[in-house]
Image 1 (spheres, rainbow, N blue to C red):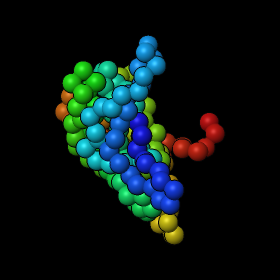
Image 2: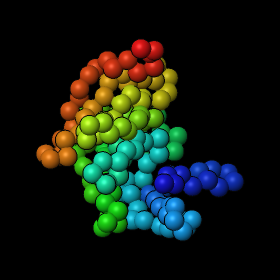
Image 3: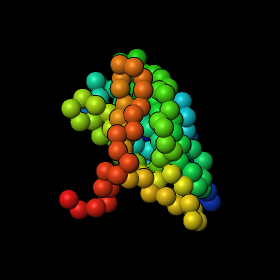
Image 4: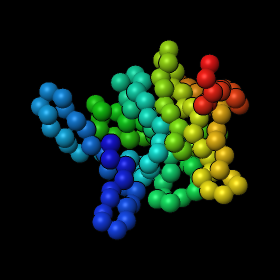
Length: 142
């Protein structure tokens, strides 16, 4: 994925997505993201790519709650229900067939620079996110 395009003087967030074919060593364009974003969570489940959260404006101080899923067989992105929290610089994990988005931040500047120590899980059957913990120990050794 190439979520940001850099120029000499600035950068801009874009919707462009690239796919790499390991057999042919070729990059090709895919359908664009529905929402331009960067610093997002990404994971694979059921042969689809899930992205969630991130930021959609370069220099933005807030995360976004939106999510979408890419189906490589159809080359299309579909929007998912929003997460219950704003998140960016979060991590996507698929564990035991369940999509998890963990940690990250909600705001990025000043006194509102809040690190998320929670996680949300996505139920693919009912298109719903659930906050599973307000304190998962993000950043703490276990």
